[in-house]
Length: 317
Image (cartoon, rainbow, N blue to C red):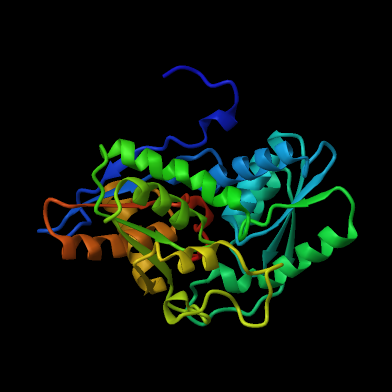
């Protein structure tokens, strides 16, 4: 393997791993894309780089600007990593109650982290589209009142989805164009939508499954696409476009308990040191694999590294 000119060049092209021990017998093969091996520890490195580079090309982001974003952790970490590497100041607005590790990682990259109070979920799992509303409203306020600020707007930024077209293309290449189903948790929707677009462009019959925490108050599986009372400035965007497109065959709920249990199995049985959303993805991918049966292929992603869940295990989208 030859050297890269910058750590940013190490983003993407993650390995695809066939699971051997956690998949039930008489099932389809399940393959996981180890996105937690991206430099800052999650698949959000892909969108951070794409969103920043596209904003620079449009002239929306210039030297001396501050990048801001609302995040429960991974996008904030990725923007902290990519943004500071490219010479920008980065400030992240997080809902209160996220694990301390996430804040420490962002601060180590040089970002400033602001925590805003939020209403905790009884079950422990967190639907990002709900808990980030307050932090998005804050970003909107900052954007309107401070000069030289660029709000990444991951929830509606087309560069988010576009970044994951490449993720989908990598999966197609790694599986020689044979994929029967794809499963992924829905945070702001970019991963599922981007990969689904790439897969469907080549394999129109591939089945696409979206996942959400069982505790979601405004569940996508129940017909919601946004939190009532919010507008396009803070909530409309990728999720609504994706669900209206019909590209997703089914959205289902996964409990915090099932996500944690499978993530623990992935670490101990498969040696994959991934986070709790990875457990949710694999938990449901195994269900799909059982339904499809031998000879089929199910793909999913391991979104982030377990290092951000060491003090508390929580299924966060």
